[in-house]
Length: 96
Image (cartoon, rainbow, N blue to C red; front, side, top):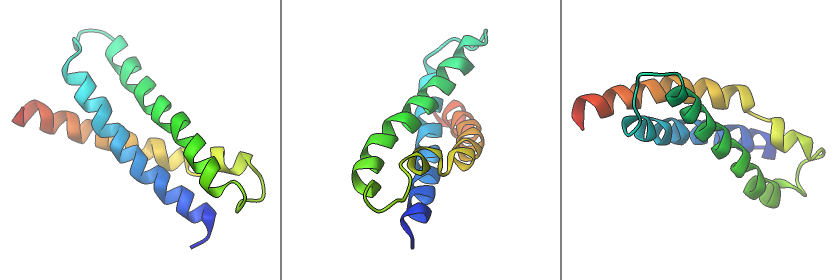
């Protein structure tokens, strides 16, 4: 696999992890206003931005443009985060 494809799949997996973290956070927040969703989205953004630095250290010399590390997989990250956030939140509400 090329480095860009590896970064893409790492971001997809991180989207699933961020969905679980966001759902765990949402369990401890009141669900009566929009700030809970904004807090969960902030967690997802933080995971995405923090993942940039290790990825840059690992794949920096292997990728042509450094901006490609930041932009690769951003759509799939959030498309993975949203359904897994809903799934984990529902599962946590039922079983916890």
